[in-house]
Image (cartoon, rainbow, N blue to C red; front, side):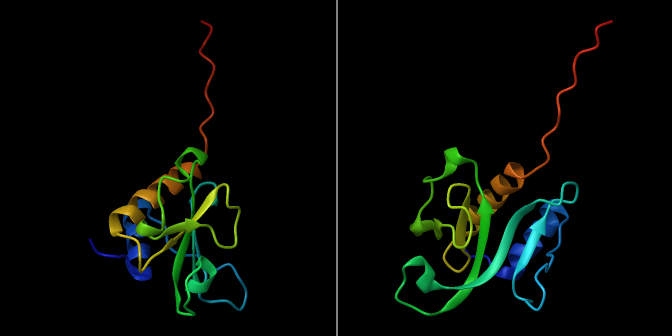
Length: 130
C-alpha cells in the first residue's frame, strides 16, 4: 500500500485519461488543474496546503488533491484514508485527499469517481418515430 506523489498522480491521470496538468493561475506555479478534454471542466486540482488546514498540529506543507464526488459518496471515506472535507471549495461536492496519507488505491478510486462526476452528460436521443 504505497502513497501517490504529485508526480505519480499526474502520471496516473495522463495514462488513464490522457490529460496533463494546466496551471491557470497567474504568478502561481504550484497549483495545477486537471480538466476534461471535451468540456474543460475540472476533475481535480492539486495544491500545496498546510496540514494545519485539516486540523493537524503541524505547519508541514503537503500536496493535496481536491476532487468532486457524487453526494451519495460523501462520508464513505475518512481521515484514515487521507480524505477530508475539502479545503477551499464547496464541501457538499468536493473532498480533499492528502497525497502523503492516502493509499494509491483510494486515490485512483476517487479520481475515477471525480472524472465520471464531471464528465459531459450525454443527451438522450428521441427514438425515431418511423
